[in-house]
Length: 291
Ligand code: AMP
Ligand code: MN
Ligand code: MN
Ligand code: MN
Image (tube, rainbow, N blue to C red):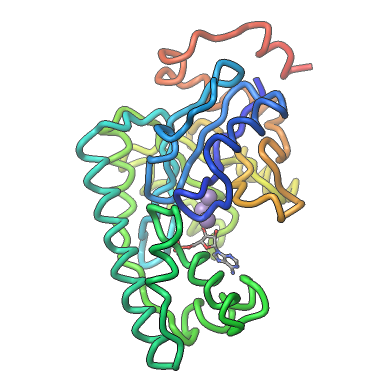
């Protein structure tokens, strides 16, 4: 098994097409790839390539709120036709549109019009602050995406607007209703101490969540070990992914993140009954990953 269960296409804030991601996964000899765009599922149906070389796992990354903090929840193996999930994602996309209109109004008041028009010309279904950052760079209001976040988009930034995401429990329940596995994305990236992170995990489990993303790009070994222990202590499954957005970020690529170690592999997310029911386990590939 060589998997990447977290990446983005241009249907949200990635720069590449789903076909590019699939092709890259095949080139890098992955067995499974999940395209997990922010609040949208459109990437899967847009694949035109022959996917015989890699299993494409249906996925999504839902922006949720937990005690006022934004937490990202990944859903894997969701039924993309499920009405409950579909309606939730539509509401999230509408929240994104409303936030964009408010940002546009603020930016126009500061003397720069055209943000909404710019976004309308992009292929994204979920418009994100990354797209807004690109517009700010194009308009020479910021030197880079990163600087645009700092000056304009972060809380107390020049055009900051609060996002109205669904509650954590609502996001997790929609994933479960769609037959999928809910996973806390990049748990080490939230401003939470260990006690608060554990509280988050408990609430996530109470809502039906079943896994943690225990490895991702740039995670340090101490955090990886901690997340593995946390997952074990709460009987959760462990997932992993690159969170790939763009080829220009050279520290990341499809499939490029520390693999789950041998202990973590004993609770890998592909051992979950939902996954096992979906894919016939390929024993030769599993053995290869343990070497
Ligand atoms: P949104 O979901 O619209 O709030 O956009 C969030 C996306 O912006 C994240 O998924 C990241 O890809 C990107 N992002 C968030 N913070 C930063 C930052 N400080 N610098 C660059 N990109 C960021
Ligand atoms: Mn993103
Ligand atoms: Mn995320
Ligand atoms: Mn992501």
